[in-house]
Image (cartoon, rainbow, N blue to C red):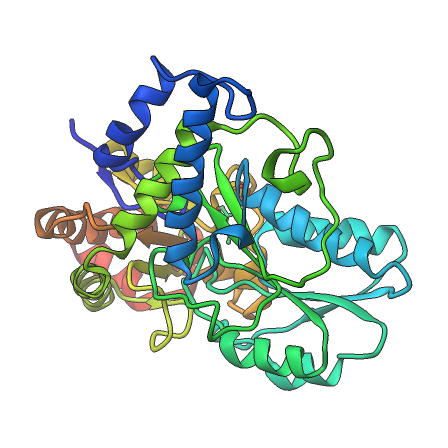
Length: 397
Ligand code: PLP
């Protein structure tokens, strides 16, 4: 059975063109880019090309790109660099809905004695900007706010936030792992000091990422070692994956608007048909301001995990909450921060589409979700308790 993969916020299929670009660097061209001989030196040139390709994806200068191992490393590097560069400042700000790669770093720093402000979001996952601005102080070392949320796809007003913070001369980092390659990003218009990128979210391989570091931003490396990345990140480069990330960056920019409109059309059809056919279902997040491929739908009075298992039997791969929190039965911290009631948060499914999804796949999901939910609800005492009409319907069936 072929899988229908609608879990692209968890990871993406590597583009065959990226694989093709990488393959020679996993076989014949295995030199170390730091070597003096030309066998290695030639590889250094390819890394330089890849750096320019990744930079062009966000309209940065090539020297402003530092290759890392993943989005998590980029986030850790940015936040820790921010506080180490300003050791006298003891206040840091983020939101309540960050990915664990930011959230857990902030929680660790809170345990180390930092005063942390977690900015709340509203019912639609929109950030409370007044709360953010009211909490900025002379003691604030860094503000880290994601560009787009991995669970709901909600996009934050990063350009505006960056402007306010740069006027106050406060360092700003944005975790743009879910936004880069999916929506246009131009760091000439967005005055962020640092921005995180992850390869495997944009059809490059896993195990490679990048950190954009604006020229002139104070920096303290996270991985200390050799002189790689101009001393900003030690460790022999993951050459093939860096080349794959370069290629994937070029591919992401190709026809972005056309790809996005197709993906958004598929997502919108999937969403509206499910809402039409399944009672007590609702979309979580600001529908007007979302990534084109993401929808997070709650099905009241059923468990997200049970839905996932039944979808899995049909080959449909989606996610309940963040991939990193699946396996735990606690509703996601993002949905809780949005104030989604437990009865709905427990039954939330994230569908995240990519350029590879088709109309036929969406038809298949639309056909199969309503009977799955109906079946699970018939087994759910909460559904019967809370929905007498549903019970009556089931009895007469
Ligand atoms: N930030 C966000 C918003 C993410 O969605 C993810 C991965 O899901 C990460 C960071 C972590 O990226 P990586 O898996 O490359 O470490």
